[in-house]
Structures are given as C-alpha cells and as structure tokens.
Length: 317
Image (cartoon, rainbow, N blue to C red):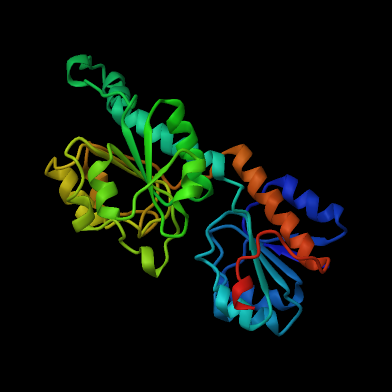
C-alpha cells in the first residue's frame, strides 16, 4: 500500500515501512498540496508540522486513506473526531519520547537550581560572578507533577533517585496506581501548587487544560518555587507567569513549549530568571528513532487489518 510522509522522519521508521512491502513517499507538502495528493495514499505519517484537519481528512476519505500516524504523543494537529467520522484510524507513539522529555524536565530542575544558564553566559563575557550564583539543591525537595501519565511517571522515577518527594495531580489516575510509581496523589491542583518546590507539567493541550496553570494557580506557589513546562504550549498562562517572574513572586521557570511557536515578542524572552528552549523535549536521536518506529509499527498493523496498540480515536469509531 502507499504511505505518504510529510514531515522529516527517522530513516529507521521509513525502512520499517518499506520492509513491510509498502510504497513510501516523503514530501513536505503544504496544506493545499496535501489536500490534492492525499487521496492517492492509504496512510499518512506526520509529526507536528503537518496539520491534518477536516479538509485534509475529507480529501483523504474520497480516496484510499485508512490511517494517520503521528510520530509522537500529541495529536492536537489532527482532527481525530473527523477521522472517526470517515472511518480513518489515528495512531500515535506515546512511548516514543517518554525518556527524552522526562530527562529534559530533570535537566531544567538542575539548571535553574544552579543558575547554569546565567553562569555560562557570564563566563563567556569574561565575568566571574561566583557570589551572585548561589544555588539550591533538589535533594529532599518536593516535585509536583501536573499529569502523571507515561512521561510523568518516568520524571517521578528520576526525581526519586535524587531523594525528592513526588506528589501528583491527575484526575484520570487512581491513588493506588500513582503509589505504584512513588507518587502521592493530590486531589486539588491548588494544593499541589502550594506544596511543591518544583512543578512540572506533563499533559496535553485540550479545552479542559487550556491555561490550567493560570494567575490563580501561579499565585499559590511558594516564592522559592520553580515552574517547568515541557508538555504543550497553552497549558500555562504566559502573561500571568511573566508578571510573577518579573515581580520575583516565584524563583524561576524552565519553558520548552509556547502558546505561539516560535514565540516572537513573547515577554518571557526578556527575563533572566527563566530558561527557554525551542520545543526540544522530544528532540533526541533516540527519541526520534523510537517515535518514528513505534508509529510505523502502528500504521503497519492498521494496514494489515490488525488492531493497533495506540489507537487514539477508538472511542469515536
């Protein structure tokens, strides 16, 4: 069968599809050209750049499109309900970037605690500001996780290795299941915000999570606490976060994702007490290979008439 890949993908994933005797085409199409070409294909494999919204899906349904695979965990760039309406399965790779994103969250915790970014930039300017760079340990501090799925669990595991206490807010995971991963369940988000020394977000950006960390929630944080977001832009109210950081009401933040990407003219860019990266959470060699191959495996299963392991829109079909 014919599979179209419209975003850069690990070669290992492409080879996996070819070994399964599928005809694979790679071309970075814009929306207009994708609508024109998609009816020719049985499968579409994408990352975050390509947007598979209703017009694309409708065009695919007029042809042979059976499955859309997202080489990653987030599917906010795919209209999964529209896919279900046209009997098109959506699959993803939720385990692909788990390690990579969890490691970045821990990296942020260590970097902002020890002023690594400021220390590096000052040294390269020929400065020696040792006395201004007093840091804090993460040892025996409390990490609060907002979202305790695959990435949250691994982040907790790493934090526990630093002898941290881990608490978590997730309405969809039971107290007992959290305990298995060393996480103490917190029922109210505001309680997690007030009890944590570090807060790390690991949840999708959907209607119910838009600005889940807002002015009210941010105001509950300790003055010595740090906020980390390696999940999705839009989950944190950036204007409210800027104000608290600017006024010194919280110690700092590490932000990898933004409501608008790239974050041109974003006020957070002006602050010294925040570390920013350009959405690199899943951007490791290992993570990209894993995400691509897992997604490819799911696409192959669908095209073989098998039930995929990571079937995102199953409940709508």
